[in-house]
Image 1 (cartoon, helix red, strand yellow):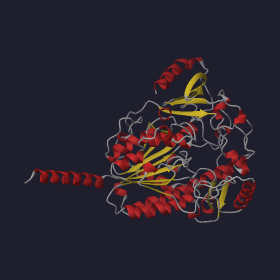
Image 2 (cartoon, rainbow, N blue to C red):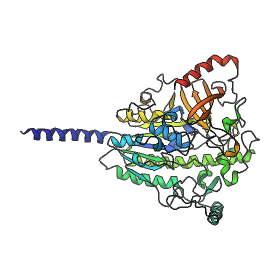
Image 3 (cartoon, rainbow, N blue to C red):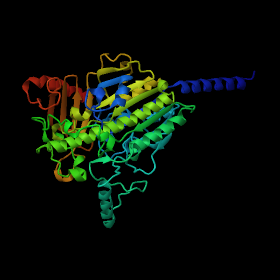
Image 4 (cartoon, helix red, strand yellow):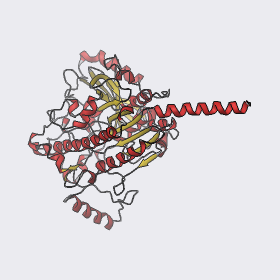
Length: 504
C-alpha cells in the first residue's frame, strides 16, 4: 500500500478518535444569575420558596462559602469568565470592556468552543453592555425586548411613567434607544405584573433556551449553553403569582440596619443603585436613619418574589433536560455574580467588600459530579469555575488561569482546601462626582475565621497609601457589625493577613 494511503488512513483514524471524544464529552448548562445572594431554601432560608434550585442542590454539591472577586457585575463576570483576578485583568469598573485590555484573551466558553463545543449564549453571561461575540458559536436575544432587559415593565403606572419620560427626552433631544432601537427607560423599583412569565425577559429567554435544547440534543457536538438570568436584579418585577407566595407583613428585615462600628464611612459609599428609581429617590444613606419597616418589607417582598420567579424558570430548564434525556450527560453550574444587601448595614445594593456582598451561591451538579445532596464548607472563588469546568469535562486546564479547580471537592467535599478567598472593590469610581470621594481600592481576604480589608488611595491603576483597615470576627460577629482592627490583641493577626494580601 502506498505511503500516502497509509497517511490518509492514519489521518482518518485520528479524526474519528477526536470526533468520538467530542461526542462523549459532557454538555455544560451554565446558569449565571444577577444580584442573587445565597438566600434560597438550600442555603437555610425556611421562608423563601425555591423548590427548583433546592432540587438542583439535592442532585449535586452546594458550596456554602463561595466568593466573588469584586461585588459588581462587570469586574465579577469578567474575572470568572477570563479565569483572572481583577488586578491581572485590569477591569475594576462597569465601563471597561475586558477586550480593550486583553483582546486575545480566551474566555471560558471560547476555550470550550476551541475544544469542539457548540457554545450558545442567551441572556447575561458577560456584563450586558459588553457581549463577547468571540465566545459564542451563536449569541441569542429574545426579539421585542430591550438590549438591557432587566428593566422590563408590563403594567400601569410604570408604563405611563415611561411614556412621560420618553416625551420629555424627545423634547430635550435625548435619545435613550438601545442598539435594537427600543427605548430603554427605568421607572419604579417594583412591579407586581399581571402578565405571564414570558411577559418578562427571563421567562421568554427560558422558552427560547428550551427550544434551543431540542435542537442541540441531536447535534454532533457537545454544547455549552449559557442561560444568564437578570432577576433578582432591580427592578423587582415579577408576575403577581410569585408575589402572592408571600405575605408582606411576614417579610424579615435586617437585624443590623446600621454601618459597622468603627468602620470607615466610605466603605458603604456604593449604594446609589436603588436610589435612582423613581419611587426610591428619598432612600436614606447608610449613615442616616433606616427606611420605615413597611418600606423595607416591600423591598424584601419584591426580592423574594423575583427569586421565586427565577426559580420557576430554572425549574423549566431542568425539566427540559430530563424530558430530552440530556441530564445524565450534562454538567450544571449555577452561580451568582455577587451578593446584595437587603437593609444590612442600612444599605440596599452591592458594591462593598463585606461578606453580604462578596459571598455568592454556587451549585454544581450533573455528569462527573459524584457528591450529591452534599454541602462543602471549603472556601472557593468564582475565579475557580473556569479551571474546575475544564477538569470536570476532561479538558486540559490552561496554565495561566489564576483559580484552583475544585473538581476534587466534587468527589470529597470535606477535603482540606484553600486557606483564604480574595475580593476587592474600587470605591469612588461608581459614585457621583458631587459626593467628593477620590478613588479608593479595598482589598479583602476571607479566612475561615476572619475578614480583613485594607483600603488604599488609588491612582492610574495602582495602590498608593494605606488609609484604613477593617477586621471582622466571622465566628463571633458573622454579620460584621464591629470593626476590631484597632484592637491591640489583633496586631499580629493583621500583620499575617496583610502579608497574605500582598502575596496574592
